[in-house]
Length: 59
Image 1: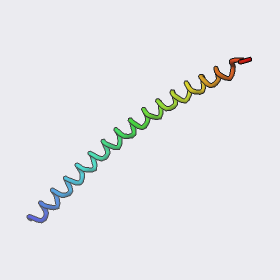
Image 2: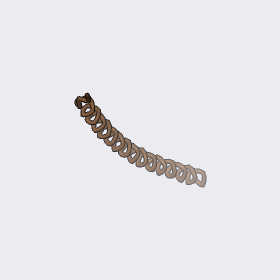
Image 3: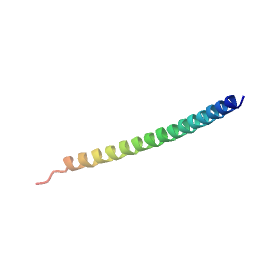
Image 4: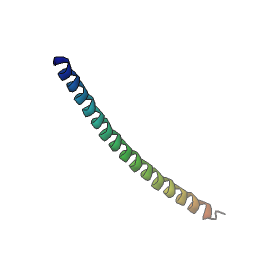
């Protein structure tokens, strides 16, 4: 019976660790999406600036 209790405790700890990792994974995915959105904004702004520079007629 004691070994069954130990096995049950081990399984509970592993399930808890899985839940923690799933939560961490979700948080990391969210941060990644935010970083991607920020990067896209910066790239668009840079493209706009480069386009403005190209449109200026320097003579």
